Image 1 (cartoon, rainbow, N blue to C red):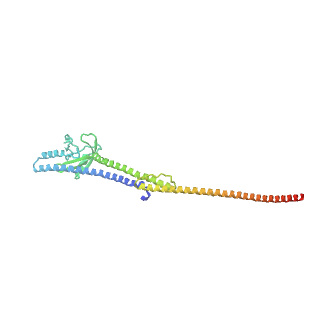
Image 2: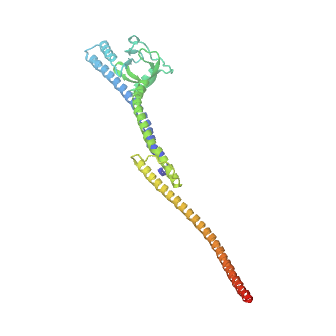
Image 3: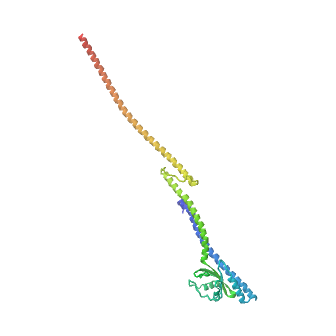
Length: 322
């Protein structure tokens, strides 16, 4: 696709669109990163709990503590572990009996291997399967502490072989999404402000530019009655508008001069026609006068001849009478 075939408005919007697409991609990557970070965090917390259990196991092996004392003290310390608010570590023995359950101490000792979540999954079995692979995660529905409704939860589990325990902890998926949206809302807010600024800036360029192009086309067609906007701007569009306004004034002056010249030509033509008609009329009049003068001359000649004849006759009569 050649950019030369695109309008300037489209070209200006392309970087904005590209930035929006990149932002969506980065947001998706950020959400995936959050999932990975929380998964790594749960893994680290379980490994910490395993270290606590191993610490007391070594005390048991050294004879410093009995098995009951070691497991009791390890359970007490693991119960106290908290992270990211109220998230906790729980533990089960090899048969699926709870050995550590901080939110509900009364549930410790209960068999939970065969319980299901609302999706009908044996999630404890899934957690054991993941732990048997050297550590892994399981996803299931569970209720928050003190809540009835359940939410999707992802947990990491690992075995502590010396005591046959499976230690695990998890985070709720909607907590991860909530963190994402809390941060995304801020980004979206700044993005929206940036979009509005970009929108206003682009409209400030493309709108006047379209009008200017329309004026230039109208001017090219000979219309000098157009109104040029933006000549008072101090940017490139203002310079273009000022140039177009000067061109409009020049063409308007040319048109006025041309119109005046055409009027002068028409007036000269009319004067020539009137002069020619006047000359014709004067010629006819002079010709008539000349004929009249000739006639008068002829009449005068005739009168003179008549008078001379009369005179001669009178003299003749007078001579006869004498």
